[in-house]
Length: 261
Image 1 (cartoon, helix red, strand yellow):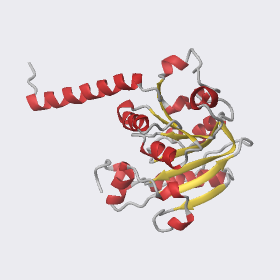
Image 2 (cartoon, helix red, strand yellow):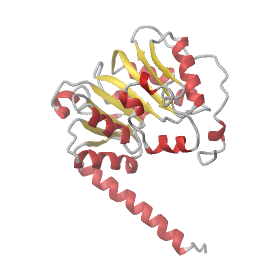
Image 3 (cartoon, rainbow, N blue to C red):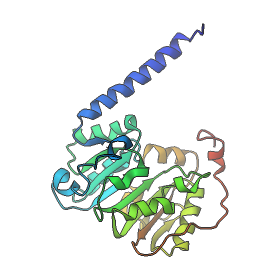
């Protein structure tokens, strides 16, 4: 027989219960869509190609935040730009619950949340339906290029629904992801509009949403003395995309886990 410390048992029961409660609540949230791969694999998502008229009720441009976490960036962008529509996407619903609830409490009608795998993001939006993408503090996936959200594999997915010359914003703490993405942009001659190695050293050159929104994770990296990088580039539909042939020094602090450094 294995004995479990009562405090540990209580802690895990509470965590599990909290997550289940949030999942149940999100089923009732009108601004949340929870769609696993097992569903869209066989049935097309109803809002695909119809987000403007069927959900937002307007033709304002749509911006996606992929890997939105708690939805902090999505909600704050929606506050900043009431004449644009925003959709936060992530697989972790317990985190997303925070932003979704906040948007409902503030009656932000220009924001929605989609809980699904980003690997199948092209199944939820039709050609030309999205104007802009934000990638905020994405996992750099240092061991596997195809999992990086700025890889050619993902850029090809984005092309299926992003308008021609649509904007991709990358905000990150990772030197590895910054170096990789910059090399990919140069390799494929993608139009690079902004490239900052430290956004708080040259804020005058950046849009207000770059330095004016600071999430929990961003503050965590800043508190550890890590600079925040930002790139803004456009993604044309024409031309094939090639992975850069480059050796990149890994992020040392990530190699030892997020809690080091």
